[in-house]
Image (tube, rainbow, N blue to C red; front, side, top):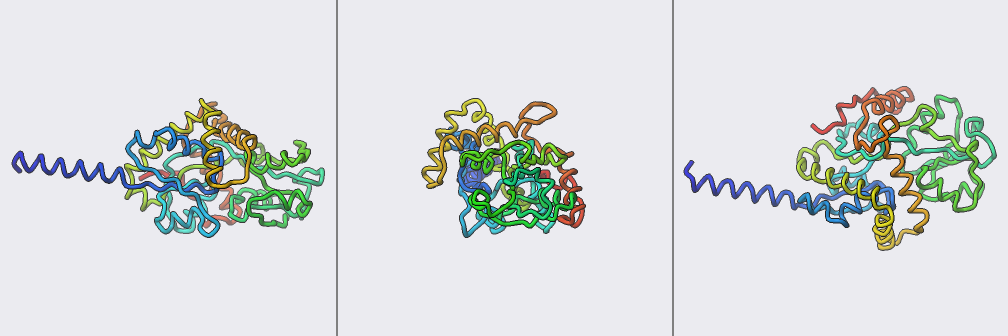
Length: 314
């Protein structure tokens, strides 16, 4: 190959790589806009994605189309999932890879309104998210022989507040604070925290289908680096981060308030700190994958254990 052809080929390949990097990388969080996803909003607002050379579009799910449906149909390249959700999806035959792990701890709780320890309420009507997220709770209730009557709800605590349920699942950064804002007295003896009872399984991470990851590997790596930087910036600048979050929730017409979003951000950032190292590690822990897989297999939610390696980029 002569020098001219070599230069031409190099220029062509460079242009192709550059064009590829600028193709939109569509990221869909698993829920509507809120501080749970602050690091991604920060990365976009502060230009971290642009600095990495990746064009990111954040598209939230709708009432008619879930985040996972967008992933399955290649309308989005990445989404956030709790580890238990990801294992269930892999078990269904859809290979996933974790490209960034933000949560290091579990934030799920059961809140009782009958002035009882939730573990004493056998047969109780307990609220559970219609969209999922309750795999570990179902497993725990089976292991403890609680025979809960699960009552689906969409995104409100109204059923619980009205007395239609004896207890409800809640996230420590979301529904738990919504309940406090209603004026309810939530004594710790009425709250069961999964992380304190052998169920400390990581939650939010960024996942892609294996097929999509292999087709967008470079973009995925750039997205992950910039997103981690967004979360680190959010920790260092919480008030500025709240400004960004509030701008987005207002644009999306989300019914919320700054106090709730502030509490959510603080709790989400707390859950990102690993208990053992006391650091933000941004990594999927092998022991937590093993724990979640073992629990879910025992409870019949998985056909077989899913090894840690199956969730790693490859």
